[in-house]
Image (cartoon, rainbow, N blue to C red; front, side, top):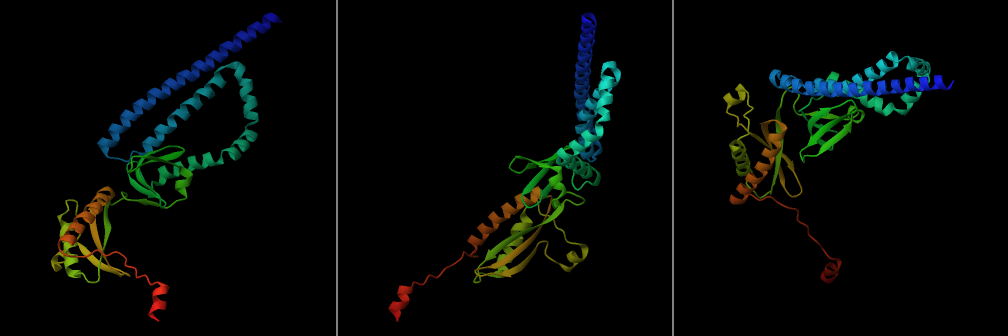
Amino acid sequence: MSIEKEIMDFINRNHLIAVVLVMLLASLVSYVIRRYLTKFLDKSTDHLKVDPTRYNFLKNGTTAIIMGSALAFAFYAIPSLRSLGATLFAGAGIAAAILAFASQQAMSNVINGIFLVIFKPFRVGDVIKIGTDHFGIVEDITLRHTIIKSFENRRIIMPNAVIGNETIINSNIKDEKICRFIEFGISYDSNYDLAKSIIQEEAIKHPDFIDNRNEEQIKNGDHPLVVRMISHGDFSIGLRAYFWVEGPIKAMYAHFDLLESVKKRFDAEGIEIPFPYRTIVYKNDLKNKK
């Protein structure tokens, strides 16, 4: 019995070593394939100018497929593990129910990740806004989450299930040209026509400004930049410039530039940007007047 036990221990040890070797080989193969795919897909997406999202998603799933295949091969190729595999598969129904209950959030992320790749509400490289708070450039889409690079150079890692339930604003899909609303307030005493012309002059001088007029508007002599009065506030008149620009990032910086240049022109030409006034009346003063 002792000899048989030693033989079985030796076989089991060899089988264990074989499993370890198979998994190590699978890890090496996965690493090599991922490196090759990364180089190949980067060149292909740049050369063909195609959407890299689906390729990144495929690359992220490569490791799981290879490791799962290696594990299945180990169970099939090693005789002593076949009975264990049969036992495991016999209890697969119970295990699947337990795993489904325990990992429903993780599975929801995976399913939503697949939907993101299929329906493509955004792609890698798009500038998007998720909900009301998260704004940036999509860096990667994995099986579990999406990575967004904010304009503060921070990475926002959002579960795919969360993204699936949020409103997505995509600034790059179909047409990247956008109309940026740039608003100014002037006092009621200021010259409205002068303020409007200053805004128009400063806007069309900006290097990123796009003349978005159609042929009919050009023929009618409409100004390249539309400025409208949008409000009569408590302290100011609201003006809005409709500034067309190529892409959300240029629009953001153009917005900052115009706020600065228009403010300087307003100061130089006597256009007041008002601030709230408050009149404070003390009760003691009222009593003294009586």
